[in-house]
Image (cartoon, rainbow over all chains, first blue to last red):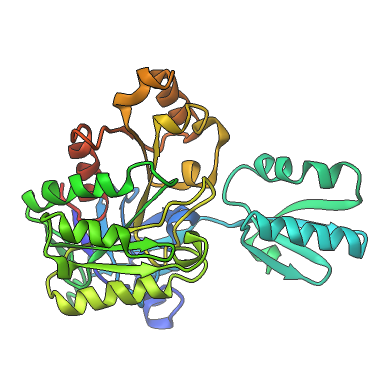
Length: 154
Length: 216
C-alpha cells in the first residue's frame, strides 16, 4: 500500500510537465483515473493501472484535481486523471417551463449549472434515471435535451 | 535526484482523522449500530469520537454519553433545527466545526463518526464533511425500500440492512430484500446486521477499517 498524504503538484506546471514528459518516454507515468463521484473525497483507496494500491489521505484543505501529481521521483510518477463529467443540458422553450424545471431540479437536489437559457444538470448516474424524473415535464412541453461533457458544459 | 513525496505505510495518516457518516431513516438503528461499532473499533485500537445530529435535542449524544462505551467528552451534539440533511449536505459547517473541535481536543484521533438525524431515503452526505458514509435501513421499514432507489440507498458507500431478526415478524423476505438491494446498487456493498445482538457488526467495522483507516 502506498500512502499519499498530499498532492505534490499540477502536471500543467512547466517544471512538472518537463519531468513527466521525461518519464513518459520511459513509460513510467502511472495515470490513475478517478471516478467523478470520488473526486471530492479526501480519503480513498484506489489501485492504479500499474497495480499500486493507493491509500490517499489528503489534508482537509486539499482536494484532488485532474492532473494532480501524487508521486514523482527519478523512476516513476503517479498522476490523477478525473473521469470526464457528463451534463444533461435542458433548454426550456418558455418561462413557465423554465420555472417548473428549476423547481424540479431543486426539489431533487440535483447539482446544476446555468448557461444562458439552458440548465445543466450533472449526471451522477444513468441519464435514463434523470429523464424518468422529468417524464411528466418532458412529455408535453418543449424542452430540448442533450448530453454534453465537461468542456462543452463550461 | 530523488524526491519521494509519499511513503509506504501500513496504518492511517496522522494528518487528520478519517470522517465517516451514518445516515438513514428514523428508527432504523443508526445509534444502536454505533453503540456496537464503538467497542469493536476500540478493540482494534482505533482512537475515535462521535458527532450526533438531532432535530432539536441532544438525545442521541446523551444516549452515547450514558452508555459507558466511550469517554463522554468524545461525543459532541449538533442540533440541526431543520431537516437533518441540511447540516450533513447543504451546509455541513456545524458538523465540520464539531469534527475540528474533537481533533483539537484529542490529538491522535483517527476516526470521527457523524451520525445524521433520522431522515428520508433522499438523504446523502456531503464529501466535504465525510470521506465515506453508510446508509442504514431496516427490515421493519419494509422490504420495498431498496426497490424505491432513494439516493441514500443508491449513493452510499455501504448499505446496511438492520434488524434482520425482525424479518419473520413483519412478513419480510430478507433474502429477497438483500438480492434487490444488491441489484439496485450495482456492485456497491450491502451488509445485513442485527445491531441489537451485534450480528454483522464486525463486517461493518472491516469495511470502515479498509476504506478510510487503510488497514490491509
